[in-house]
Length: 178
Length: 190
Image 1 (cartoon, rainbow over the protein chains, first blue to last red):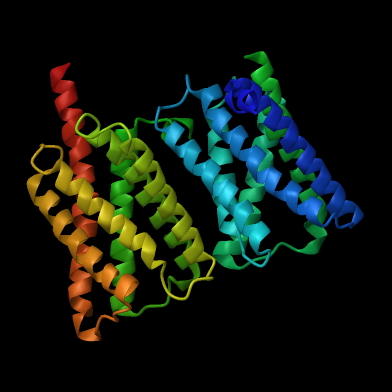
Image 2 (cartoon, rainbow over the protein chains, first blue to last red; image 1 turned 135 degrees about the vertical axis):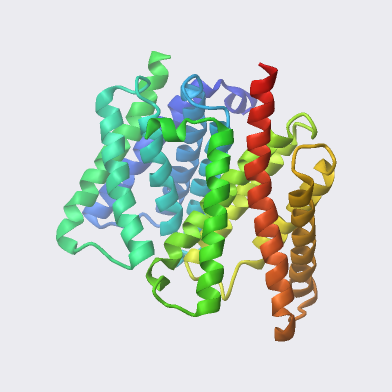
């Protein structure tokens, strides 16, 4: 356990990227097939937030040569926001956490502008595209009470896949290069 | 866009200080005039309010660096997180009224921060004193409601508004000018 907690950030971030990919695939399959995994789904939901928080903390370490030092504080805040959103959802699914995700997509999109050269272009563009769509959907919902029509639902799947590959595998690949 | 987000903390803090002041002026104008034209974007304004305040708080550690212990950085991170999360909770409408503990926490920390740095030359004295006075007002006001369930009478609302205005002006302009003074003294030393 001590070794697990004390492993270098690169190893931790890579493991968590894989956990994040698994959680996304599970949730996409769950939504697509319409099954309910009960307690395991709740566990996966929480792990989604935990792994993403670890990936976000690792992202600063990946990009620290290219960004100002205060981004370290920003990353810690963003990781807390993501983790807390998941904790709230797990505690009570009725709680609307859209604003938390708006903040996350906002940071993800603008963060991707500053991380050129760290991620392979394909992962960077996938992340930016998913973040932009996420920003539009969540922003329209919380600020203007507008919900996009159901005919656009397939787009959510594309966002989910782009997000999984861009953020999940993109980070794994970037840490591999480092 | 990349340049905007990777600019030095001093520039970002100064822009956010002005933005924070402007948003508060808009809120006060809306409150007093009773206009409803901005209702549709109230949540958006709320989000910008929280975001700009959190950015100023993150920058405030770097202003005080050298005068305060290093663990204050973690404390500033926690305070900025509380502001962001508190703003989100207000936007989601799950709270009846505002999220009072957030305002108490902000005012109390601003009071401690300003009193600690008082006389060190980081902030201009007039703005430093405005911040202390405003933070003291707000800390007392929020404590009365939060800890003693004391409802402040309507006749005292103007006093509360004055305290809020003092804190907003002192805090935003204080940070704005402090960053300006810091960059001027840094370039003079070079």
